[in-house]
Image (cartoon, rainbow, N blue to C red; front, side, top):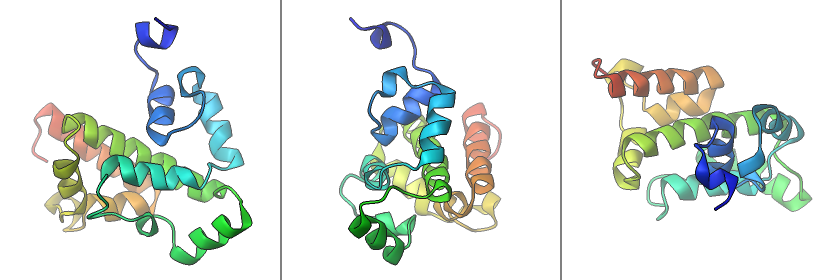
Length: 152
């Protein structure tokens, strides 16, 4: 048994694993920050979409990265920018938490993501979370309230 299998994962390791990053078991909070600062691989965006919506019925990578930007970076073989990487990190935290709360039920998790929510002014959690890290934080707070049994 490896060390990673015998102790709970840190949030950084859990999120790095969710995003499909290499060496996720050893990554520290600072290591994750540095990875985001240098730019996540473009494939990270594709991976997190597949994790939350494996059949691709409701979400597409262009929901989080504009189509032209995505293809330009892919053609150039460049990683995501720092801002795009921060957005992917924020969405990964939201997606990971939703899947945790829905016990891995991707269909129910996606339905929560795309359905308008009254506590978000009628916007969907996905729309709010993908706009900014502050939006992602708001969705995480909403999820925490729901888990605590507070009206959400």
